[in-house]
Amino acid sequence: MKEICEHNKCTGCGSCVSVCPKQCIHMEESKDGFLYPVINEADCIDCGLCQKSCKAEEKADKSFEKQAYAMKNQNEEVRVNSSSGGVFTLLSEYIISCGGAVYGAAFTDNYEVEHIRINTVEDIEKLRTSKYVQSRIGNCYQLAKKDLEENRMVLFTGTPCQIAGLKGYLKKEYDNLYCQDIMCHGVPSPKLWRKYIKELSLGTIQSVSFRDKTVSWSQFSMKITGDKGSICEKFFDNTYMKAFLADIALRESCTNCNFKELNYYSDLTLADFWGLDQVYPELDDSTGVSLVLVNSDKGQHLVKQISKNVKAEKVELEKALRGNQPAITVTPPHKNREKFFADMDTKSVDQLVKVHVQGSLVKRVLRKLFRR
Image 1: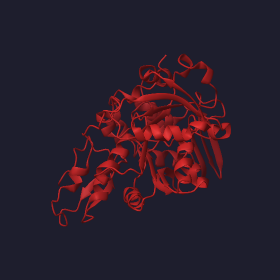
Image 2: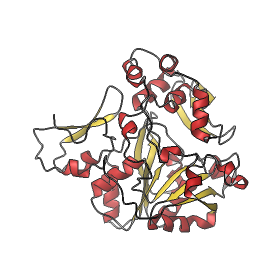
Image 3: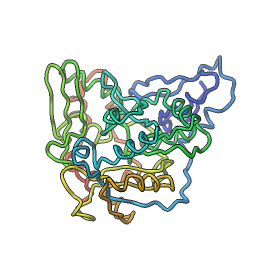
Image 4: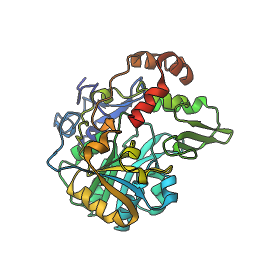
């Protein structure tokens, strides 16, 4: 079988599927629950576009001197309903006010995660907040290209590998394209997520929040509501979050990630500003503050456009990254990963975590988040 990218480096970005002129590539789910490209060799014309579009091992242009900011939306209601400082909402509002479109990860009707296109302020909430599941890109690269060719402004958001996938698919720069990614330590299995919400037995799921701030931003909770009940558990008590934060349920490519050491194809990178109390304690509150990395002139332009609606402080890059090591270092493979996925069809998620997640998870998570 032809291989577009080495299996352990394939990010599942879908660029190869989108770029194929014969539409002979499709994504299939592996036993671990991740999507990988499969080629219908009978229809393949060996044009090589799929391999040319793949940026799983390419380096981005690093000539721009990155800048870092601690930033939060001045609208407290928006901030409370966002994962960190509410900056994404302001970026989206700006693009939409210019007649543009925004692309990002949203829940489907059955609470899986996929990328969608929005162009109204009312729909921003669909893309707001973290979703700790790898999203399906679907046809969003093609839709974004259509918007760009029709001279609409586009804000495309996602993981660093998804932004790289878009750039690989487009093959050229567009003045009206703005890209924003997140500091990512890895993406967990959609199959594990499906299994987890089914085993909760909450009936038809009505809402999911991976980052509920009822307690506080730094002590967030997983909150899921169904028509037969609900749960609300602190992140270090929740079974699914234990698997995610222990790095045992991540895609294999996440342990070979090319998008570290600030190797970003995006204009802006957003993250939680963990360790803020050591840098700008006066900005620290229970509703969240974003770390914003400016990676290009376009990114600087976006920051300028939202500046009237944020409280921001410039931060030395080194200080900004102390609490956000995923920007620099690759997540090491968990020693029990293979056993974890081998048992996924026969054990409950709770059993998987009890059997395969070793050590003091809470302490490891707190060190990972706050680096204190």
